[in-house]
Length: 368
Image (cartoon, rainbow, N blue to C red; front, side, top):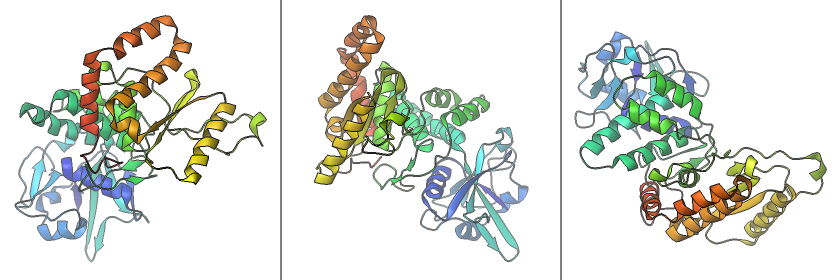
């Protein structure tokens, strides 16, 4: 039997599968659930899905994709989403045990559990946020920022808490669930489905390689268009190793440097540091990193929690980076950026960006 999770329940399971060492996500072909999925039972769902995530009941039904176009299910604890047949190949991933077995295997029964791939997850998020904007709970501006952040999480190396994504613990160092190109291609193939316009717009701003929610915040502040709170800078490479020349062998303090942000054309790197209080070891590591970037003739811009939390400090850090880029872009770039950075509209848009992506007070550090 196949279970194709949808919407919030799918994203919850996707985050869970990325974080759990005993689970993997495997690509699938075109997703067509068999008609037997119409006969799912509460007991079967409870055994197939993690109990710390799902407690199927009439009050808390589970969203699944149903075969055909019906919105009804014969299972009272299921909320059916129709039209699965219109989804393109690659829209779903199967959640498997690390050895490759389906999520539930028992005497006379096998249950395959599928979650929405990153592009379809972005579309589902766009549908929910479209509804929230119509109801006045979220602005269109904030909706796009949240979708870009979701896309960068799925294309990055971190995963937020499945049950408490806004304030729960973040898991780091994970393989990405997709790439920005993969998301864009899948969203483009979703055609005229609800939320497709907003999802495509957000997919166009997603960048690969983000290592944390705070890196995602800084990327948006640097690279999104001004109407969304960014300054429209060239996209950096994120967490991509810097090439070492042979002449540096034996001179550098590191064998490998992987900056959070790297602009090869501007010979500059940015590193986000979440530590408020430096130990001696961390202090010397920062010094050695700066020395190595100097050997590579790369301008080094450290970004800290204090720069993130204070609006004026964030603007100052952005201005410093822009001043360096001006050396490569020329006077016209400098004049345009000077006008932009002096604009109160940009300051207001950046405030919306920070308010949308920073966690609640008291749980701000890496709780995105």
